[in-house]
Image (cartoon, rainbow, N blue to C red; front, side, top):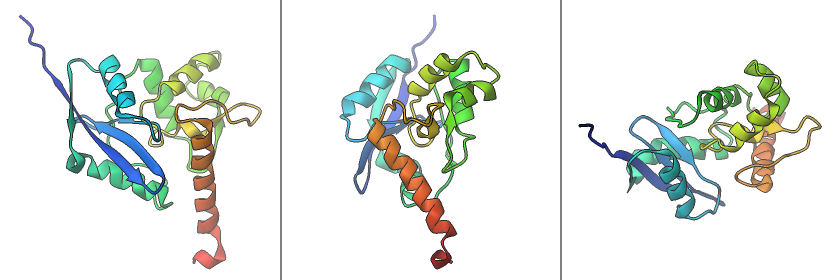
Length: 182
């Protein structure tokens, strides 16, 4: 007889300046970064729909390393994330999410670019759906994907968040290149 093992999902409320979002991890790595200013319900629903036998446990200390990397990102001090991930998705979604992680800081790519990158050029809509299902905002940078015409398209955290993240990255790069920064 097979035993049902519970999966511990550790969570905390990440707060940095105006940014307030729930983040969660398993013992393996970060599995969720929520939309800003959303209730705990968003995290809870995501966990219940995707993780077998979940047990939600608040653990600020365990989530501190992830929160620290996010803070460094928001301060313009971090261009990529070193953290481990525990992503729950189909093999297609995982391929898309891995492609997103290769988009350089401060740059954007189109949905078509991502489809071509994963060698599925006809799967632009499916790429869009996979990007929309990205459970770890910011750390898997789906905000760097824009429409082929340059338009900012939908984003789970809202188009305003997408604008803010792209602006933060551009401003950070400009500051870095400024002669006054040296």
